[in-house]
Length: 302
Image (cartoon, rainbow, N blue to C red; front, side):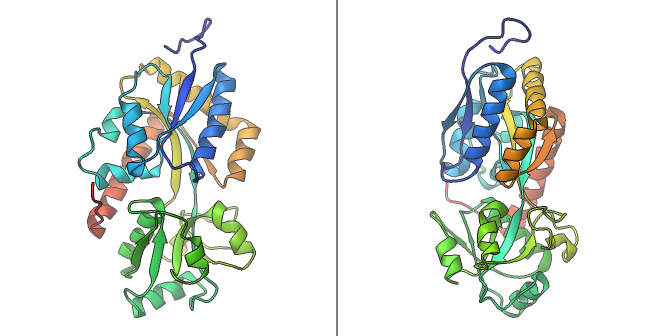
């Protein structure tokens, strides 16, 4: 058990990773594990358990000992999965105790340079004039880029064709085989700067420091606000004193200039939240995406 004060156990902790290794969230976990190790004086090992939309890794932590040594990095897809997968063996809101918020990742709406629309209003107008003729790629059903696109469709009345990919969709986007993606901003930035992609808008309510000249969707579609996010969680029966110790350690780590610099390199904006603040945030996000999933009729085969 993780002990508070003198005599802290040197038992190795596990920071579960439930997103495929090729995706950037694994780098966030590595950065967080390093800073937690420094703050708590013990090693954290990244254990990767991807699959089933991240549910395998989450279930693993739900069923782990509630001693503070096995924790998970909840991500925005956990809030989506709570509704998208109705037959899970666990309840994310009930079975994972929030520890702390860490950061959020803006997405950017990108199209190939050959696409007729040069602004988001032009894109919406073109989509309305051509319903069902624009292909929207994503990393899979229920992924953050997917639901961000569904939210825009619901709020504007446009109709896009979702094309979920199991592998890299970027070659098809660059070739114009698919016409739009809600892409993590850090991954798209080099292609935008090289003129290989055109940025129409970013998804958070406010503009991103990484693309200050690109407007937010909310500047044209009132109330639109969406982004990927990351935090820490533990099995629900983990004692409050352990949750508080981990929360304080993560909050202190996020204040470290090295952490800020590393997150900025990864395209992550800090989102420091206490355990209580993160719990409310997760509840709000789960409710928000439940409405989107139900309204759009999104389903997966379990």
